[in-house]
Structures are given as C-alpha cells and as structure tokens.
Image (cartoon, rainbow, N blue to C red; front, side, top):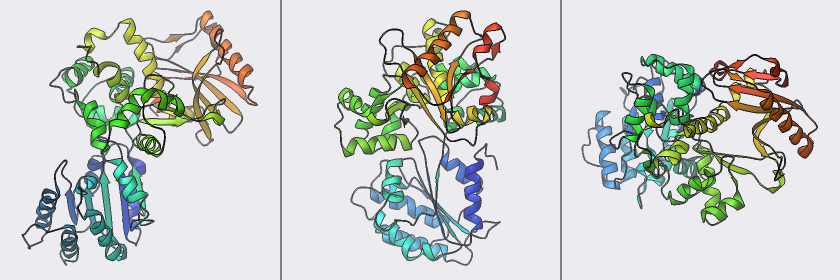
Length: 473
C-alpha cells in the first residue's frame, strides 16, 4: 500500500474486515481530501463491485454508468437498468456468483459505491432502492462490507447518517477523512521527491492546508513561490478556480454557505450567530443551523465558546487555510504574483495570522508537546472588553487539570527573540485576562514558534516553549 498516515482510518477498515458481521461503512469529508484514494489503495482496487456517480448527470446516465460497472464484474444482462431497483437487483446477483472477487485476507465481499450523492438525482428512486438493497439483502450477509463515499457531505449526513427511515441505525462504521497534518505533509513531500524545510512546509500549510490533491500538484522543479503562482495565480492553474467550485461541489444550494463563510472570515476570531445573521443577510432559523453544521462537518469552520461568552452563544470561525487564502488573495483578483508579494510588510502580516490557524489545527500536537495529550481541554480566543489598554489572546487551552495555557504564536524567518517590550506585553496580557476573567486556574504563558526561540534574559516570563519540530510530531 502507498498510504501516508491515516492510521486511524486503516484501523477502522481492518476492523470492518475482521468482524464476522455485515458492515456498512460511510466515508465522508471535504472535496480533494483523499477519500477515494484511501479506499482504493487499501484494498488494492480488489472489489467485488465498484462504481462511481457522475457529476451533474441525469438518472439515465447514472444508470448507464452503473450498468457498465455491472458488466465489468460479470453481469451478462447487457441492457441499461430501467430504474435503481433493477440496478441493485442485478448487483445482488453479481455478489451471489460463486466466482465473485473477495478480499484476500478476510474473504469478505467488498462493495465500494463512490460519489453516491451524485447518483441520487431529482425524482429518481435511488434512495428507496438503495435502502431496500441493504435492508432486504446486505444487512444479513455476514461476509459483506459495503462502503459508501461522497464529497457532498450534506447528502451523506442527511440521507444516511441522520436518516430516520430505512438507514436509521444501519450504519455500522463512519469515517470522516481529515486533511493531512504537518507531519503527513512532510512525509508526502519526501515520498514525491520535493525538498522543503519545515518552515516552507508550514507556509505551504498556510496556503494549501493538508489537502493531498493540492499537494500532489506540486512541480518539484519549481520553487515553492513558483508553485503558488503556477497553481493558483495563473489563470490556467489547476487551483485558480478551485474556491469557486469548492462549495458548489459539496452543497446543492451553496449560496448561503458562501455568504456565511465570506462574512465569517472578515473577522479573524469569528462571529457569534446574531452578528453573523446581521452581517451576512442570511435569515436566522433552521436553514442557518443546517448550513453551519454542514460547514463544520466538512472542516471549513469551527465553533467555540470562550471564558466570558458561554452564556451568550458560541463563536463561529473559518479555519480552512485554502479558503482563507482564497478570500484574502484570489477572490478580488487584485494580486497577480505571489513571488512579487513575498517579503512585503503585508506578507509578514498575513503569515503571522495564518500561522495561528496552523497552530489551531494542530492542538493535539501542541498538547502532546505540553505533556497533556490525555487531559480534556477547550480551545478558544479571547478579547478584553476594555476599549483602551485591553488585550487579545488568539489561543487559550483551558485544561481540566486547572491550568490555562495562554498561547502566543510567532512566525519568523529566524529565531524569535523576546524583547523587553514584548515581555511587558505578555505580562500585561496575562494580568488583563486574570483581572477580567478571574479564572480559578493557573496561567502558563506558552510560546509557539515557526523557527525556534533565541535564548536571553527575558525567557523567564514563558513557562512553555514549543518549537516547529513539535508541530510535526
């Protein structure tokens, strides 16, 4: 297998093969995150049956594609199924053949239906036929592993995972595929002969996130900056129009999702729901609740409560690096070249903010570096209510062991040096937080850097220092 990382996911797949029972596994995650690659690579494309839906095609062509797959796996009928009930009936006959292909190790029949949401076209009987197939046949086959996958996360969640009809409590396993971590990105680059230092891998994460498809587009003959230009800023680049396509590929009615994302991204720490409604123009109600849930389940946003607003409602914050980068630099099409932008004051401001998002996406690694991997915690940002002389903290780790880590994140070209002025700022932040919030916990100032810290007499203000190597653990 040529799989990088994904230990948790591989363990789930192994369990599905080991258990002597019918398994119904649902795989979902945002576009380009590597769902199909993982399943195909793990099983070495040895399926009892595999097919995929076709984007933006009507029922007739979906059934035509399904029929082509049926023929590949031994169905001799030849004609296109008249409806989905016939299609799944013929799939059952394929699976009941004595010479059906099975997984080598477990002997299970593995059925992989990819991009299922595309199959469920308007006014088709796909959902009811699929429901009937599983409940009348699949759920009684102890040697069957059915894997359903799709990027349209809202369809997967609403029609299968949260279904109150035939699929209610039928799913035996679900697997959300997350983007790569920094460590997995580093391994990916090495395996593809791309030489980047940790600082450049971090910067890559600020732009592309940990999306394998994006990383796979790198040209190892070009510098990092040249890759950014050729992939994103060049109108012929593979990712130049990716932002425009991203949400419409995931959600059927994406206008509200886009309004929510673009409004939310205007403020770094995010917005509370009431402010989001007012600024975005999206009506408050069930539709907004659903859109927020879908965006969070895809990993585009997160919601959190901080120490002073728990009773007043959560904040919603955009945390997808590629989305944030696109909103900053691509949507208005004002920037023509990344190579011309780097090293400018605006570049360093962007990089500082983006490094905070990278850290937020690697809280498990930060907690491991602090020796608290098993300690429950909540992560949030905080802003003082004072109009003058206040303070802002972009990441607090509020721990169950009565400690709060006040995290400062610094992205620099060289080792970061704590000046006397910055030391005073840190003390002021901690004092202001203690004064306004009055937590019954100890405060530990924690410094997270992209290039290490230079030792001097001001280091005594910091309880914990986390260098870039720890973010790669």
